[in-house]
Length: 95
Length: 482
Image (cartoon, rainbow over all chains, first blue to last red; front, side):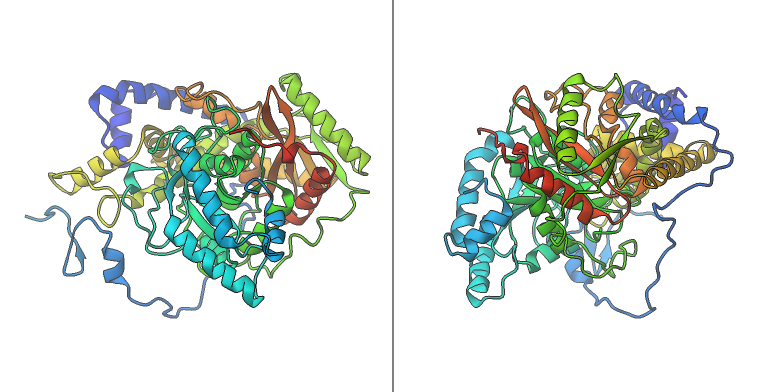
């Protein structure tokens, strides 16, 4: 499956990745090559096979619903790019 | 002294031939001498290491040491280390001082191992040559024009060059085993769920496993004793009691049945690698093992299926890097979307962005069934091939990598060629099985490994076979001149 410029722009938007205009043609080419390799899968009949999400088909283990963590917000926020009053700062979302 | 095995160093510490402090200082001196050329370490924690060494010497004096107490180790920079830079080979995390320790790091520290520093790696473990690292490539101590393999390339180079006694690695598609093969080491990828993934920066969560990179199978067993075991903080970690991985090392191999996959021993396999494997087979035969052909007919689909599943999981896992809570943030964002897009666009390297996009595409509406579900079905076929083979044999033996270490720059420009490097290792991750690489020979002055794969939770058996092989060969004792 060959991707064009529009496809790459759409995927990059979904992934919230900025791709420079000058790189788009090359990115499209390389991803198309990867998808070409992946397409070998399509030649195999898997209609009778069920999907496998986990090596042992194990389900999600749950722990008891108890509080086990202590509040370390200030410690964790020390490495944040910008915070104020315990909140993470980002550009204004609502005018 | 610095190129001795962990088992030998542990003995020397017990007999007081050397102190943990002297050993640690000697490794630090060698790191300062060789690391500028090899680029194996990205962070050196000298002060902390010497403090840990003094504590280890005290602990040994008090008589409550473990075999790893006082043994210097390097951690792949994918493991969170409290108070120490954890960059995962990426500009995105160039300023990330981890606020907590990974379970693997914590357990090795509890055993008394001394952290010398953090090792270079492919960015977010996405690579097979260590060339995608934001910190630049690592050079192979056997030939500095060549790659050490990847993604745990820094860890492998550090152990091979004698810049630590042992190292941690992680393996999502071959990232412990292929560098072990390229650098002449023993590397073990445990069964999925054997070792906690807590604090290990996630790449593909259904495939990732941590494991040892060491100079011998015995050393790998000693490390496994420290790192394996259940962990409430990782819900995918298996609930198993303590297992002593050294207990069966000396078990005789009589009666052992080993399978040789027809699909791996074809005319396409490099004849020199073929010869090395045949010699290893003869050695194991002389120790009592018998060999039989087995078939893994869907192995050729493992690379395509992996390059859907791993990028799909990565695209979800790496969505946490958004420039808001930690890591890289772009300058002067116009709005929130610009902050996300530029922080990620500038913070991630090309290979990581490619994989995020492939994964995003495979999970997007209209393509999910054709790519993601299809790959998961093929994953089951691959697992079934192994299940069937293990009805007849105890283990499978084959190549780890198609060849010895390749030259820097040789494959980096073509992602698909690089992906095919892992043709022998990837199926093992998809099936969740334990696999290891151990040195099997030398080719034009470069080491090459062979791979052993076993059923789930057969690590003790793999280590036993590897140890017996190493008791009867000296490939694992070869050291590069650096």
